[in-house]
Image (cartoon, rainbow, N blue to C red):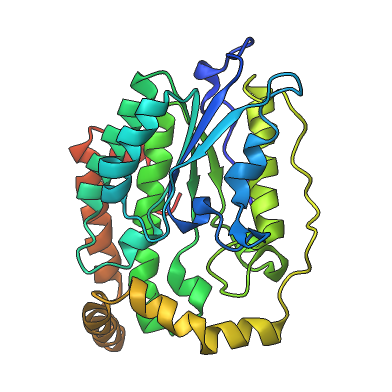
Length: 303
């Protein structure tokens, strides 16, 4: 997992944070805490980070607005108004994977919504936390013709997130690199959500940057987990049982289109024109960045 230059977000750093600091977490199942179960409930990286934001005499207040399965639209229309009413000093916005699993995926619409909600949060004084995420096709180990269309979508989302993070002064983590994705000890049995170790790693990395920027004044989250990572047998069992249902629920309106996209991948591969699909995705991304007045050359696809 690599960390964006601390300069991103630096202009919002403060030496004397409010007491107590209020932290709001927005997003989907990753931020809800799926994969890190404690005493029958999800905990997750955001709760772990919250525990280390305030000093012992003034612990931070924390509200988790994230909901499993949330799309960018859900975060913008439902979670953001509730978070604004909470008046957070720090707000995390981590989303996008669920959008890539929908037939209606539209990178320009996502860019517009994300830009607006980030502006709403920062306009009310919140410092943003954001992250780029790995694509679900790779995480699920899908065959290449199925995985490539999802990978293009996630790369586009990540590019938009990265560019908007710079615009809105966010503290940004890049957790889509191979070292993070390929480390099985970081992931839960479903291979789509971090396990306890992964959630602790995200929390610790955010805490490091927020400490540098003057937002975190408590102890760093412990990195070593209390529970062992899932065995290969447990992972295979999850995929054979609950995993099938999870994928079906998330991809219920995408599967027919994904099969058509896979067919297009195979046809272009056979014709030696696979680059046309990449160019089409690049064009859609550039249009999305232009729609929110971002400098296209400054945000390359997959950055």
